[in-house]
Image (tube, rainbow, N blue to C red; front, side, top):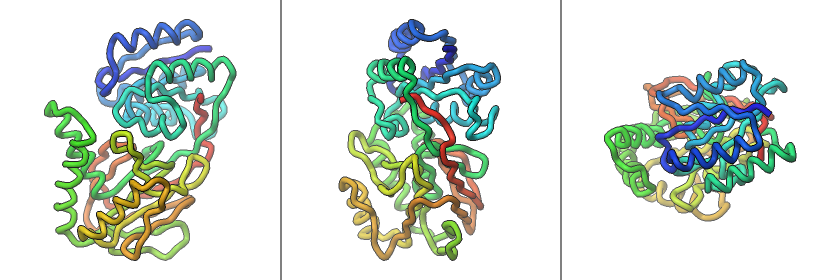
Length: 308
């Protein structure tokens, strides 16, 4: 089996020594080429070339951003559902690794590599549904407004050399909350064929559960959502402190479904149309895409085969 290992050397828990160990293990069972990313978009370029070259397996070793780039690169070369599309393998190397953990893969890269090799040997895998935000694919979540502001600010702090930790995310989320809470609601959401819902402050879109992780603790925005369903949407009508704290507590409480008169939630939706009265930031899989005024979210069932 021909495989390409796409490694992000800048990922949080990826090291040169660890990469060499993983590559040696994978090369024992696969005809392996290794691409170490050197610029933004390099993972997508490598995945696109792998699809064109007819490779059987594309392995992403890095964080969720690396996985997202690889997936988008693969789909830039072949349409969703194309059976000639390579299988995706994932070896976590980031801090949260939401996509891998939602698939039930080990967070430890060595354990994940052993699991991947067993899957390759046995031919084990599953097809997963993905989401699209306009022309960008995402694997586990997307968001407009507050969370996208957090992603953009954390990216800026990381570029300045700050270590990305759950505490940094929490502090950044709090700082961004105070900015968002001062503004009037700007978002309108139409879920499927329903009537539009106006005057919303946020739009959290989920492709699976959990939404993300705060350290070891899962943050469950829409527990009815999975890789086998349509998309989920959760929005807040009010940003007052009591409302936000109430819903945050619900999100951290096992599999409880966030609810309340100040929120809007739907699950298993095939299509979402989000409009903003003024441009707001959009993030997908923790990657800041800049500001948008109109975003169309689409659920694409059985889009990709993943080795598990």
